[in-house]
Image (cartoon, rainbow, N blue to C red; front, side, top):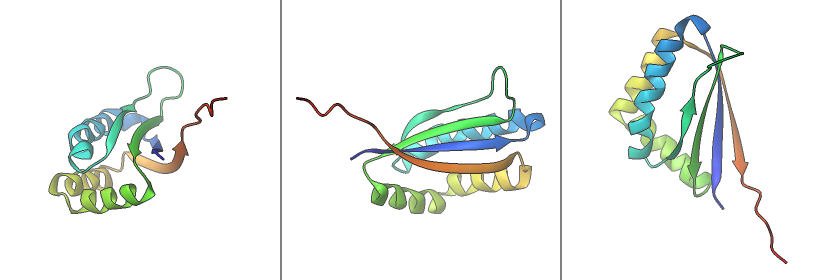
Length: 105
């Protein structure tokens, strides 16, 4: 069963450019570490401090292995450090989803 990790970020609205640069770096790092990146979304109109990321995996075990590879990856570790130092992410929530599929007749 495929799972999708839905990440909801609360970002500093005055540091959106820093968050966008952070998200763009994940576009190559995540696939390299084994995640099936669906994408990142930035605020456009309306709420200016919420962003999203979606990444799919074959299973929770595959997600856990990916997280270990991501933390060990030089570029991944540097990107996490950039977020900590820049303080542009104020909060982060992860929800694990599975797709509802038609069961057939």
